[in-house]
Image (cartoon, rainbow, N blue to C red; front, side):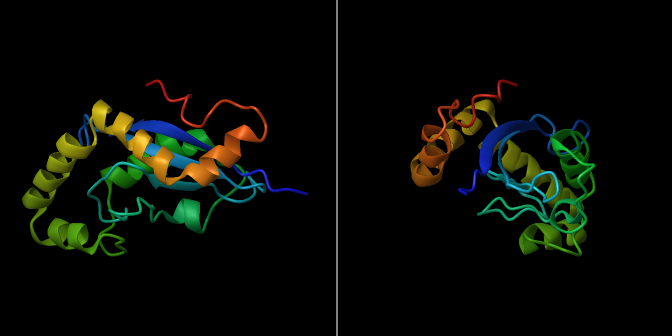
Length: 161
């Protein structure tokens, strides 16, 4: 039996009343065969400055996805509750980005300014569109395999926000 990991992209807007307001990120989502019993893998494609998100890989440190996942959760929980909560309430004591965590704890105003600088530089609609081009060329094998094999639409067409 072949594995049929599903992968797609979701456009995610920064929550209102946070330094991430106005930002737009492309999130890569991979659903394992055992989904919803096994958690999806999610990662930011364009860059974000946040203590719990690795700046280079885009991977997210979020207990509810990594350790305490339940089949009762779904994609809406991730994009309407878990990620907005993570951006609203970062946890600098469990960082993936040590620089962001240290700056947030020592100089909250400088942290906020750097978040806004990243939003302006990397989280515009244009940046999201360009991020898609980069990933498709770097990720050729997995993306080609995922949509040539069963005639589905290419990943990333669902994201017209």
